Amino acid sequence: MIGNYLITTDAWFTAPDGKSYRAAWGKIEILEDKFLGIKTNRNSTNWFAKLGSEKNHIIIAGCQIHYAIKCDDTPNISDTEDWQADASAGLKSYVRPTSIYIAQ
Image 1: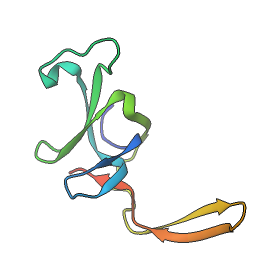
Image 2 (image 1 turned 180 degrees about the vertical axis):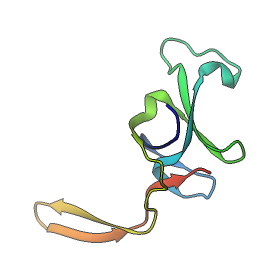
Image 3 (image 1 turned 135 degrees about the horizontal axis):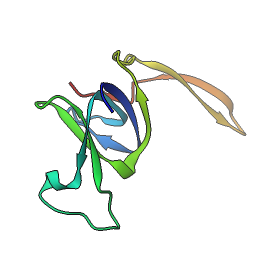
Image 4 (image 1 turned 180 degrees about the horizontal axis):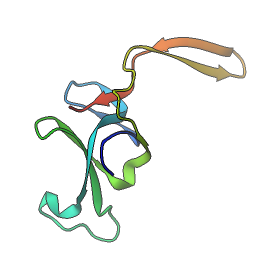
């Protein structure tokens, strides 16, 4: 994998800005488990994705990656439209903040 990727994770995470995100975008580098100084066992992931620069990056365990989308341009991080369906309340449209962390 070379270039910038948009990675969707299986769980929410907290970024250095203190906000919660469900995805991260940046230049990707795949790492083996040795970079932590320990060797993981068969019950753990044995590879990680590092997104961003050397100064500002996030490391995501391979087992937490749900989708990896090649995305050279910075994705839209402005407020976005979303919706929620409920059997009793019907369809509700609303605007929410982005859930993409930009690691550069």
